[in-house]
Image (cartoon, rainbow, N blue to C red; front, side, top):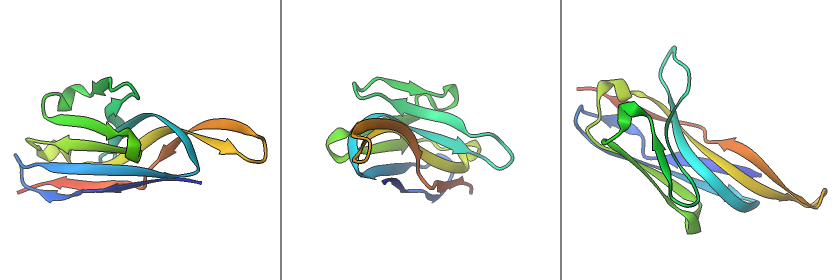
Length: 125
């Protein structure tokens, strides 16, 4: 019904940069807040950055000044520009979207949270 497809992960050296993209598609009525989370092996999934429909942003303290989240509402796409990457940024990065769809059966809007499949980011020399 709704898919979030991430791209842009990979292997990068410390100090390098990567840009992640996440496009939402499907039976979408509205896309509300979108964000990026990450999960390192043996750790919980934590918020990295989030952005509202109005463009307000929120960042984890560990990435402030290095990462920038942005969105293209016309394309239902969210981006994460990651600069000055550190080995501790290594994780699987997941896209999240709070999205409304329309139920043809119930004739109502249904607002739910959706996740992408994850993309691996590895920072290593």
